[in-house]
Length: 93
Image (cartoon, rainbow, N blue to C red; front, side):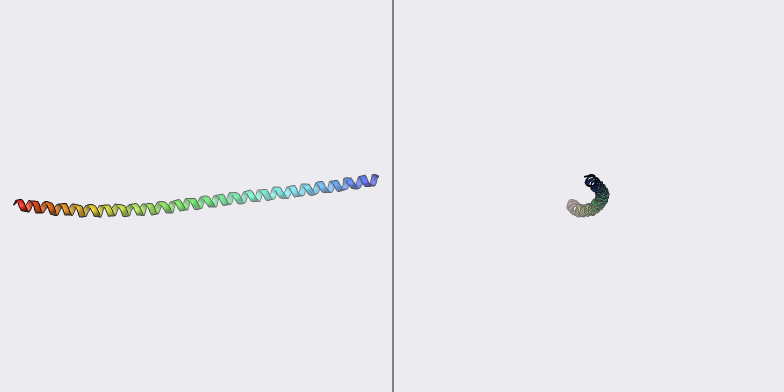
């Protein structure tokens, strides 16, 4: 009976050591997963930042195009009014 008890204790110690090893491996894997998650978060934030910078650049380009279009329309209308004004003045002379 003593031998059986000793064997049971030995088996239990082996199981405890295996459990500790598995737990250590799991903790290490969890740390690696957290590191990977942090890396992915940083990459995603970089992508978001780059995307918004590109979007802002395109919006600025579009804004400039709208400004140029309005300036051109204004100049056309200003020229049209000048022509009309000159015609009126000419008619009064």
